[in-house]
Structures are given as C-alpha cells and as structure tokens.
Image 1: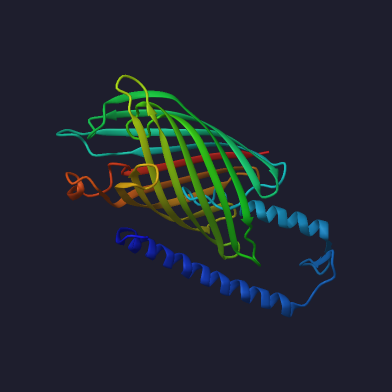
Image 2: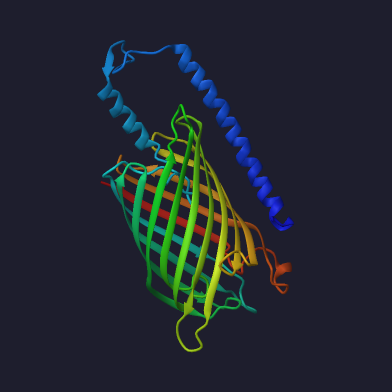
Length: 340
C-alpha cells in the first residue's frame, strides 16, 4: 500500500502524465477523422507537391528518412526515448555522466568529481528489439567530503548488457511510443564511496514518448527501478544493498533542421536495501537537454541537471537542505553516437 510519503509526489507526476496523454489522444482522434474525410488513395501512389505521383518505394524512402530525423532514443538527455533501430542496424555510443558536488566535511572546500563513461556497441537482431553491450570506466577525485574517504584514481568499472523491446512506435497518426528496457550490469566500484566491490546491478526502465506536435514537439518520460547487491572487497569487507526509484520527464522542441532543445525534470529516491526498504535521500533535478544530428548517421546529446530540491533521512543532515547523501549537486551527460 502506498504511504503518504509516496502519494503526493507520485500523484502529481501521474496527473502530469495523464494530462499529456489526454491531449495526445484528442490529437490522434482529430488526425484520424481528417484522414477519413480525405478519402482513400490508390495503393502504391501518393501525390507530390508538383502534382505528379510518387511510387510506394519513393514514399517509403521518405518515411524512413523522416523517422531517422526524429529518432527519440537519444533525444531527451537523461531521459531515454522509446525508439529502437531497424533489423540489421548497428551503433557505437560513448556516454559520459559527470557527478559533481557533495557536502564538505568540516571547514574548507570539498571536492567531489566522478566521471562514469560507457563505451557501448548496440545492434538490432530484429525490428523493435535492440541489444547493447557496454564497458565502463570510472574516474574519481574526492577530497574533504562528509562520510567519504579521500580518493583519486581511474579504473575499469565492469560490463553491462541492455535489452530493449519497443511495443509501440510513435507517428503522426499514432503519437505514442512505448518500450521496456532491462539493464543487468556487473560493477567493480561502489558508485558513491568509490571502494572496490563486486556488485550485481539490475535496472528496469519503462520508456514512453509522445509526439505532442508532429515533427515539432516531443514529450518523453521514464519510470525506473534499480537494485544493486554485492560485497565490498578488502579487509573488513561487508555486504552492499541499495535501490533507486526514478521518474524523469522531458519536453523537447525542434529548434533547427537537426537540433532539438528543451527542459528536463527528474525525481529520484535512494534507498538502503534492494527493494526500496529504507529511504536515505530524495532529490529533484532540473536542467536543459540538447540533441543535434551532424549527419544522418552521427549525433550528439548534451544534458545538464542541477539539484533544486532534496532531503536526507539522516537526522543530522535533514535540516541542511538537498539530498546529498545519495545524490550530487550537479549532473552532466555527454553522449556521442555513430550508426552504421
């Protein structure tokens, strides 16, 4: 049963989603009615702007090009779109997330800088299904931070396999896209403390996107549950259990032929225990997301998120503002990809 701690933020977010989907449904009904009034056309032909007809092959080529231009998978910054590639497509992605800033311990300035980089290879064995294999690196510089040891190093941080299936693909006639992605991962470093460990991490992400205004404005949303369990290495090794709930929302508009820009809001809750057992921190992040395609096959995504609200459950930290026990002040994501 949902407690009062969950009900208010989850209720607000559900209301926002319902409002957007209601607007989209109305748009879809209107578009369907317009298509019916226009009447049916002979199969295999469609009118060109110069009055001539183009063949079904020409039409399909144009549709494929348009679909690539509005591929939503990497469109929303930290939020992931529902699109997948077509059968036989492949992609290489370099994805770096910088996590910056925590509470300093005592007087003086503290430093918390962690860069998590993934090199991923994605392939599509069939339509609507994509598989990505990733290798991670961790670069860390921590000094004078509350409850954390000073550390400065770079290391290999494990591998992952990401499997995604798309149930619905958005279009002008049917603007809703929906997919489910599962991301098992083996990690060698604790994400916050930076201690060596052997960790199994599993994230499940429900991905939704909507063409609010066809070819002009897109809405994306993710609901994610991530659990991690394992054991720290070294003398006095102990078990490790954690879990995270995430709800992210983004609204992105086309601001150029191949450039998309808009705001993104993320709500996170961090827990001690693998099944949302003991709440430790919660936080809200807000920032812009930018996506640009250099060519049909190469693209770039840049997103910043700053923590604007948060709370730590620890009574000694609850009055100090922001949720910095499990999260950071700033996140920066840079992705570069090439399709082939």
